[in-house]
Structures are given as C-alpha cells and as structure tokens.
Image 1 (cartoon, helix red, strand yellow):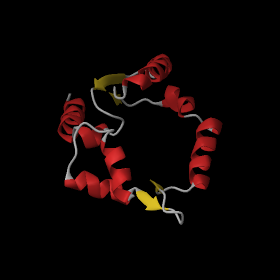
Image 2: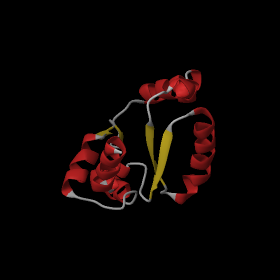
Image 3: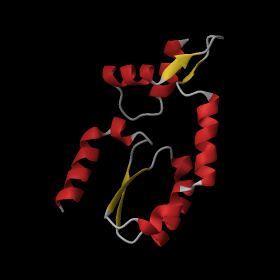
Image 4: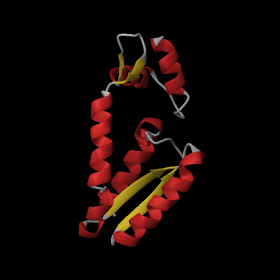
Length: 126
C-alpha cells in the first residue's frame, strides 16, 4: 500500500531519486485503516485553510519593501489559469518583484534544485 502511494506521488514530479523517495516517506503516515496520506491531520489542514481565508497573504503585499523573487511552477498545466489570476493580483500589489516561470511541479525545488539555487543566487547577486 505504501509503495502504491509513493508510485502515485512519483508521477507528479519531473525527476525522482532515492533521496526524494525518503523525503516522500517522511511526509506520509498510515491511518489505522491502512490508508496512506500526508502527515498532517485533518484538523491541521482545516486550520491552515481557515488561516488563509481569515488572513490572506495578499493583505501584506503592499508592505513588502525588499525585492521579491517569485519562482512560479508551470506544472500541472491545468493549474495555470489559477496561477495567472494570482499573478495579476500579486503584480498589482507588489512594487519590487521578479517573477520567473519554471517548467516544473509545485515542488520545483525537488524537481530542479540546481536551477532553483542558480536563480536565487543570480537574484541575490544581481
């Protein structure tokens, strides 16, 4: 059952390694019914969603003064419409930003750590 979960998780990334498999195992737990899921409890997940709804991150955008580097994933493509809407809001509110689209999944630091590191270094050195 655990291997099935890991195989399903693997499909969401553009690269895979033994270390990423270990990291994935660290993020899951088995329920008493033998179902594997993310390690957070439903209560924690509900709390996070309530927090985001009650205190949206966009409320602080206009107070961000330091330059911002936003690395934006592009996979899966079906999420790009939502990403585009969020970017419009971000660009209206943030004054000093650089946005870079990276052709990887949401966990782009797993998919392409070298590129992420290089872009951060160039941004900080620039």
